[in-house]
Image (cartoon, rainbow, N blue to C red; front, side, top):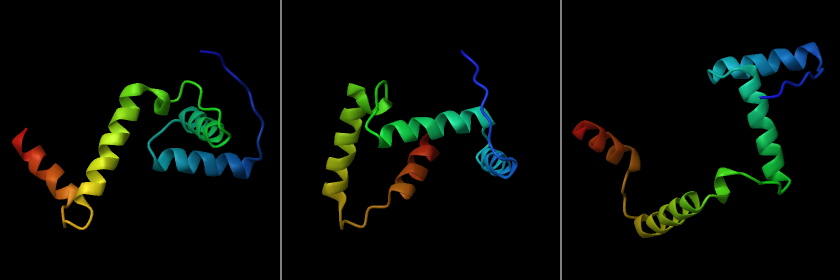
Length: 87
């Protein structure tokens, strides 16, 4: 993996470090994620998880399930808790 040196104002770096600590991430991981999000918003999703066929399939399944369950009173969190109890 290549290394890159960047310069930023001290107060900005402190904010980056605070967010990284809150999310239990390294500074580098947070900055990589920020760049990935920037690329995705600019339409540069090359190599993105969203481009993988299995992720596309899962998103379609989730969308279809959401439509079927809309207004049914189904609670996903309760369902997860129920399944976790079986493991």
